[in-house]
Length: 398
Image 1 (cartoon, rainbow, N blue to C red):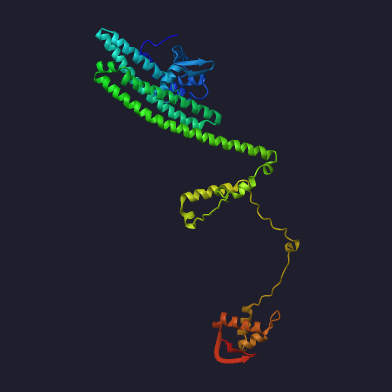
Image 2: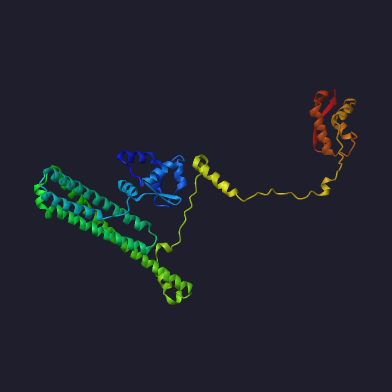
């Protein structure tokens, strides 16, 4: 197995394949990343993938790839996306502090004593960061487990295991406080400089914050477990009710009718509906209302085909050609006959021989039409006569 020769080579490799590693990290919870997908992200350069595989940045399993556990754990810890809560790290660092304190007292060389002191400082700083991160991860895992785990038994078991992790972290916090306060009081009085004092103060503040968060986490776990117990009891009752219903003995074996009759919960009330009538002005002017109307109109048109009404067959009688003769009266001919004589117009019209039978009223109408059309050709006098209760002026030709 090849290894990186220096830190610069590691950073260059990670920078060059950042697109591939980013995509693989996003999909770390799903199925393993296919080799051909990875090949597309490295410009179809197989040597670049092989370079990462040889140096254990990624691991190949048949036709799939995945990020190596070492780098995956590093990315998750830096990005605070780690779901594993490993309290052994804190315990190992506590042991490391105790060992280096012993080495410090046994050493006579000042240079080597300083190296042990620096290791103690770095380890104490690391204990505070790891503890705080574990508490944050613990709280996130508890929330995710309660909200996302579908199986009630697994949900309860996982919460109990996470509660045990909480207890382990609490014990390690107590051990850390005991270490810096009581167990090695001689070392912290004799070897303490300004930097170590600052580290110890910071560590105590971090542990104090973790303790308060763990108290809240304990309360949250108890609340979640009680909810699970209550929900699982409801589900168990529903299963029994379903079994009795399937066996057709629900009403005879239980008092469900009496219980439901006494229950006046709102859920059993009919859901009232309050229709909202929009104003015509709003429907005509608002753009969103117009878009909604168009959508509804399109939905209503789907599957519907309007049929045009078809008229009944036309009867043959209407199609037969019928000739109607109508005799028209030629007023111009009547006028010419009147002008050629000397009689008054009313008598002339009354005695004129028309081509069809004309009543008295119709002849009076013809008289009026003649006066209206040809008044310039007649001499209208002031004399008035009467016949059959009809008064008329005496009119003669010019």
